[in-house]
Length: 521
Image (cartoon, rainbow, N blue to C red; front, side, top):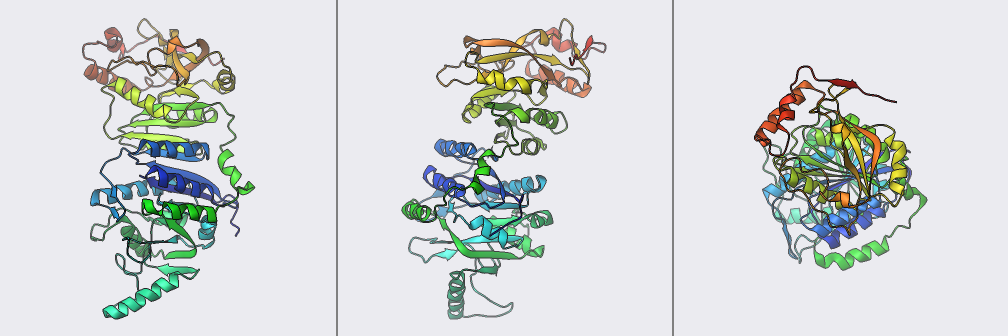
């Protein structure tokens, strides 16, 4: 099977899974043959099991074209050896996850998005087979015993919610006729081929033309059908997008823990020998030189500020990123995903901002960052930019073994070309830690104050450090409206100036501050 060179496929899955099943799912993805396809991965981490979170994070080391977006888990998902137990809240939460994946695939210009449930194992030729079908929406079949003593049934259907037989509109069938046609439908799908169906899900390849036509998993308000896949399929049909199922390479569904032995047998029987065609997955990362740097950021409503330019300036020398989205209500997350495309990213979303207690927020940032097994942590805000020569220095700084902390000076810009310097604004005369080598055998301690607690633990200067002449541009004060908003925030969060400097707060709106031109030499 051949596909056009440069065809970009996003493999994506919302994941809330047990560690044993998740490990096998990811092993199956690694075994996919890719031909000329260029693969990227997007996982929405909805796990409530820390081991599953770690397993998912480790996948980044397999493919640098991986983005993990953390979703704060809500709602209990029950499953046992009998069945899985879904409710309305869980169904539409997953639908929201899937639509965010579709939106990302559209925005990033992918040719296909391959949506897969995390309890499926794939035949190595699955993806190439589905692409070669040349259909806007096509799924690979799998078979499940929905109840332990029931016959295996496919995840596709012909009519309504899950009717698996042929029937003409207006035609009345007896129960016996329905049963005969049901068995005929099942027998047909046991034969290798490509068949048009009325509904599908869980293992679905969606082409870009279907994406741009407006397919979606959001509920149709005038239908009470159960499950987000039904609403996706009905909307697709209304858009004149046919639905197909391929039956040449059935997937294996690990529906119960007791299926694990058969799952391992499936993996052994369909193991794909690593080849040159798959090696590009783990090394294709925009030819960035290895620096071991993890960019760590806290962001909130940065869409119309400096975030896109800042991330673009830094992406050339980082290996991965960990982003805390602290309650954004704009496109901050989408900007991160676009600007850091091709770089492993972990995004953690706080539904409610934690900025009223900065120590709690910074410690959350720290904990999420060390989950990514960082070598070096570069801690910047979304309005801070290292001067360009850092790209040249990064490799030298991170390859030595004597220094663990690098301190830089931060310059508060008051417009595009000048920074402020007076008795209240002289942050650039102080060296602060921004780049830290993470040592897991060091006992880090935090300054427990709700504001101005520091972006790193309070005792990092117990480690060997160096004062660097590299500088950071801070754009947070450039805009007069930003200055006004910051003043109001300080007045609310620190009205008695317990954690800051009252005179500096009061000087923010000085109409004639002393400004110094930035020296680019």
